[in-house]
Figure (cartoon, protein in one colour):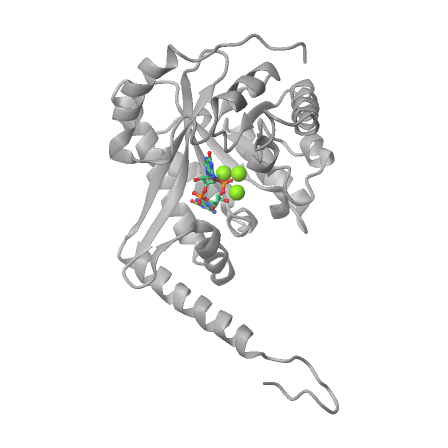
Length: 292
Ligand code: C2E
Ligand code: MG
Ligand code: MG
Ligand code: MG
């Protein structure tokens, strides 16, 4: 415990804080080891168009099961990797692996698929962020318009202009940009207007009640309308039920992502999913949009 009396009292280091620091240090050293041994992996979650039920893309999601720590959620280890800078090489590995997977799909005749990859604020803040992304596209051969980078608005805080310039440069090259987790934190309509994004991803928090509460429905309907007026696509995240699918299609949501369609899949299960989905797709209600 830090000296908590007298001149210059700075902080009190409680046993609880101490435990958290030790836990994070342990997680970081395990993550470094996992990175060196290439034991991270990716799963891919489909995104489906409400207009025809077809698969339009996949979101790459990182997975890690550590021998000592067991399965660790990205919500826990990504912040640790961000604080330490490990996210920079790790994020590059994610990007390259996802691009290679997307190329593989194209080679197997599964065309027109977009691969979405989550980007950390720390990656975006690197000076060479744009050339790094373009290099990976070059190396893997994936056409830039088959890649979508997902960013969140919390990543903009502090360096908005620099971030906008980088995103603009990527857009110029054809890469798509999505604003992730819209509806959490301090989501602002200003970002929706000023950021050079193609796609707005509505957070699961908005989607959970969309089929049973009018207030949730009017939020989603209004935001979708604004997004469409601004020429952005709308993706609903965390869709788990048919009733949500129906409500969201009526409101003009363009794409659906969530357990209702599929959980995130290991790469070797994508083809099986696509075959099964072709069957299931036929029984989906393709509803006409309300006038939104
Ligand atoms: P996100 O980008 O918003 O991803 C959506 C999360 O919701 C994923 O959690 C996904 O598995 C989960 N999800 C999808 N559909 C449903 C559903 O119907 N119900 C429920 N309950 N959950 C659903 P996951 O994979 O645990 O990832 C959590 C977060 O970690 C991601 O949120 C993203 O912010 C971050 N993340 C994941 N992979 C990466 C990565 O490669 N790089 C970076 N920087 N962040 C990543
Ligand atoms: Mg995401
Ligand atoms: Mg999200
Ligand atoms: Mg999230």
